[in-house]
Image (cartoon, rainbow, N blue to C red):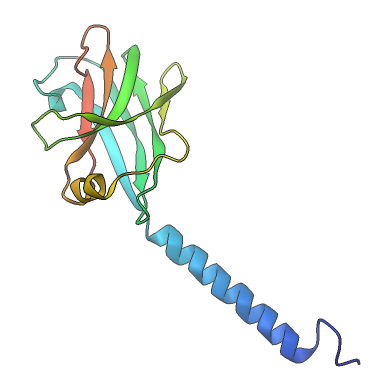
Amino acid sequence: MSTDSIFSQPRLAVLVSTAIVGGLIAIYSVAMAAESKVMLSGAQEVPAVTTAAKGNGTITIGDDKTVSGSVTTSGVVGTVAHIHEGLAGKNGPPIITLEKKGENQWMVPANAKLTDAQYQAYKAGNLYVNVHSAAHKGGEIRDQLKP
C-alpha cells in the first residue's frame, strides 16, 4: 500500500480526529443557545387583557446574540408581533418585529440579533414577546422570555 494514499493511517487518523472535533464543536455551539418556551396570555399584558386568545412557541437566543424562533397563536387576529425590552409588569419598546408566516404563525426574521445591552436585558429576564390586535393595539397576549 502506498504511503501517499489519502487514506494512509496517519492521514486517516487526522481526518477522523478532525471530524470528531468538528462534531463536538457543533454540539457545544448548539448547547450554548438558550431556548425560551413561551406561553402567551392576556393576563400577562400590561394592563391585563381579558381574552380567550393564547399563544405558544420557542424563542432561541445564542451566546452570539442571534435570535430565532416562532410563536403560534389561537383566538386572536394578530396585526403585529414583537420582542420587546421590558421588565415583567412593565411595557417597553419593541426591539425585533416578528414576521407573519401564516394565519396564526409568527417567526423571528432571519439574521435577527440583539445588541450587547439587549442581550444583558435578556439575561436579566427583561425581554418579552407579545402579539397585538386591532382590539388591543398595545398587545393582546404576552409572555416574558426566561433565560
